Image (cartoon, rainbow, N blue to C red; front, side, top):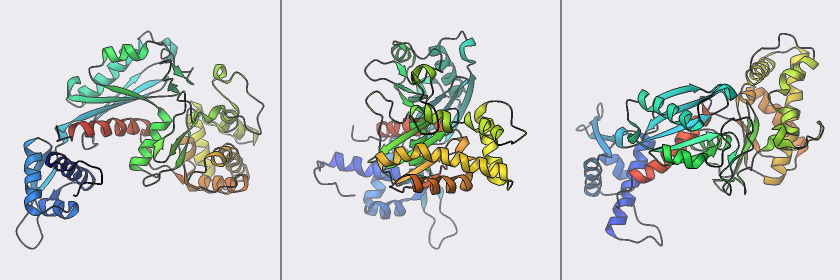
Length: 403
């Protein structure tokens, strides 16, 4: 591949560019032959052969079988060596920490769940993090030193000026101003932290409904109501990391909530958050309200309403859609995004029925008309986003053959 304008044209740099292009193609397509890699990169057969020999010697690719069932001689196939690097991710909530380790290809090779029963636990946060990470590393058959990078996803955001976690008063033990330094001292690998909803947006951008979109909003509704803002292809976090904390947004239909950080809630959360769905169902005379955590109850009620044809359930779905669109109208009026992704179980459980109702209501309430879609990444989306974030940096480091 030719170097771009302004790129130093030294042989080492050009080789590194070609190496990375080939590795990215192998990640995208899976096993490829030398001829296919040459065609996709524009390299000659001799150059492609030298490239693959170099990557194989560096332990970055493996020769894995040959083509069969085609005219002509069988061709050697190559793939990225899964053991070339590993990354880890954590998804933190007040109830548990989910941890996973993925190999360089993105395949999850170890998974662990550590219960953290709120304020009743006496285990320090640093030990909770290391215990969860160690559980996933052990499940992967690896050692801590095998993990190149860790990304931790939490509610709220760590303020870059103070180092303290903000907007997440419901996460006990995570608000010490020295926590990040303590984690850095305890962890043997570099780590980063990110808001959980931002990580869901990253997962959708890399793997799901937002692929190919540079400007989109992701609305999340599960344990809490929040949003992620992707502008010009990049996450917009705001000055204190609080961009997208839309649960605090004042909206019509609810009294003003004051001292919102102490209440850990706001108008939009009270109007359309998961906890509002069972309450609304009772007001509409719906019986058999599911018990248990309100996020699970809301998802079950919304799923049932999307399938039912009785008046009460239809009114529940329409009213819920109007409430969701009320807050979304403010977001799209300010940001004018190309796309809105609906994610979190209280939204995805409504499927196309709920999406269509929210789309119709939003077109009544906002001048700009983004397309609404339901998120594709359903299984542990925060954790998947954490892994994708950690893998992106790990690949940059491991695949850099210019050093």
